[in-house]
Amino acid sequence: MSQKRLGVMDTIFLAAEGRESMMHVGGLLLLTPPPDAPKTWLRALTEELRAAKIQRPWNFRLRAPEFLKNPLQWWVEDDAFDVDYHVRRSALPSPGDERELGVLVSRLHSVQVDFHHPPWEVHFIEGLEGGRFALYFKIHHALFDGHTSMRMLADSLSTDPDERDTPIFFTRPPASRRQRSSSGSSRLEALLELGRGQAGATRDVGRAIAKVVRAARGHDPSLVAPLTAPRSILNRRISRNRRFATQQFSTERLRAVGKRAGGTVNDVILALCGGAIRRLLLDLDALPDEPLIAMLPVDVRPHDDPGGGNALGAILASLATHVSDPAGRLEAIVASTTHAKQQLVGMSRSAIMQYTALLMAPLAMQIMTGAAGRMRPTFNVVISNLPGPTEPLYFRGARLEGLYPLSIPFHGYALNITISGYTGTLNFGFTGCRDTIPHLQRLAVYSAAALEELEHAVGKTAQDG
Image (cartoon, rainbow, N blue to C red; front, side, top):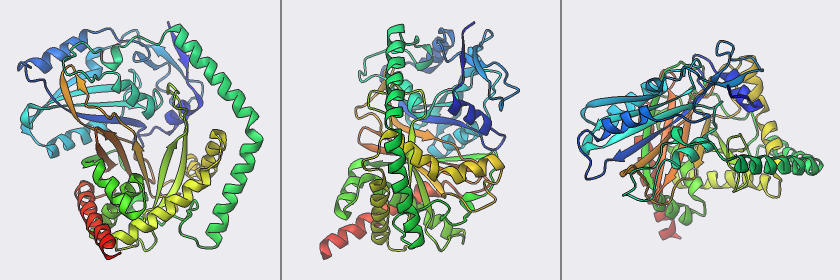
């Protein structure tokens, strides 16, 4: 029987698993069947996949699922693998709309994975308006990180609308021995490089932390320090129930706003999120006087890294939710992200990860001691922007219309906003605790209104100038 030892980060994600803080991520794909698809097309597809041979590591389960927090866990092959458990078919009352789809996906994402099975599921959901269907998948972070999961999912899609034989991710064979050997060699070289650069990295980190401390003492709002985020309803203890909402924007619209305001697409994303959150909290009479703080993950992998591990840095940035003027809010965000990114300029990968570890140390202590959600948060919300495919993609001839990521709320951090790019669009996925954040679906609506307000504000500013 094949087996594999869990890595350090894999073990941490298992240790963090709980009834309320579930450590699985997911994705929602909206697809339109090919024009020549018969009515039985989706049924035939799911039956084909149920008969397919499952490849490693998709047949891996925990050796001792009853002891999740045991640091000596192993993945082992599941001799009793049940494909019907993992590949499921659902239907909305036809014709189903986006709201009904969101309700179903919210419920599916609220269910903890069963570690007595390999920790992943795929749901084919039919009954959407216009004959469309959706594919929802979820996978525990201990098996794969988001980078690797998205890469494997993309491998199941094709740029050819006439392609009908592309294998789905869980039926793909493992990498060749040559590929594994090459990957191992590159990782060894990376470790040697890490050792050589350790002293320089420590100096870089020391200088960066000193800047953060000086900014905090000088009350400089443009460079955010840990534990300066205000208390808010976003940072309470959470329940197991989830809500999920989506929004899609043209990348060019956001790029045009950023260009006029002297910022980037990511700055405009933060302004939309900040504007939407500000309006929701005003509705609830719960807007803090101080600006909310976002944690922004930064991928520090080399471009040719095959994925499979966790290699993330992070910066903290203000969402300027205390600023009522949309243009002024964006200006404050640009100043904050500019200073935060300047902290990383010239740093090695090792230094960035050390710096991130120090920034996130208060969060780690809160999680380990069970204090998360009971004391001042390290930040208020995670906002992550994932690069995505730039060409239209197809799954067995079905055109991919949208790709929306679902992520992980946990105690003290009840909202996660993850964005995925796809063919000139930005697809927003708002994942939150149903019981901690009332009316979470309004964030999607309010983000659209925030973009219109920004377009008007920066357009007027440009004309006035």
